[in-house]
Length: 270
Ligand SMILES: [Zn+2]
Image (cartoon, rainbow, N blue to C red; front, side, top):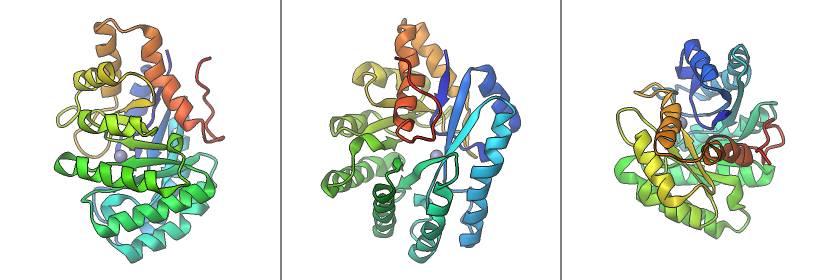
């Protein structure tokens, strides 16, 4: 069985992680643009970061037969600075033309501020105009429910956003229902220590089904591990889920969502 990792920050990982992912049958991964562990000093730092995502990581991944793709954007954690955000957004389209850049992400909310919402809305416009998929960051912990609702209401009222083109990430039990009922995609992020564990993610799959649901490991600078994705696969096998359904969740679904970009090379099984 093949695995697609739809959300991982490889810039924060060692080359050995690519090797481990390859040994666990990961054939493609997607790296959304996000915070770097520190607030960047100016727009040029984002420009360099986008170059890293579109030039260096695809080359590093290719050594392990993994196709590396990315989403480009101004991330929500630094979006409270409106003028910096707009400067960054001005060169996002240049990077969206790169052969491995699929869509706009991870955009969204962090602390649910007015400026974050403005930067989110401006990037939704860009995605609609350029017909790109959107990867959404929902806030963590106490801010999650409110932030998810704010984005959901905004997108539902927008008029020109196709829900099939949008995935809300870091979804949990209390947000998945409202996301998928409105026709959007939901992805659950697994963390080894905090938040969503592999068994908790499998519980949610058993409750909400397989349609328009994805799972990711979101490896980054914090406590995280690309192998948690494969722990969730093992958890499904242990519970007796059909191999067929496991592959739908970990391969076909991301291939279906990401395949809305003509640049994505992997097709879902028939
Ligand atoms: Zn992320």
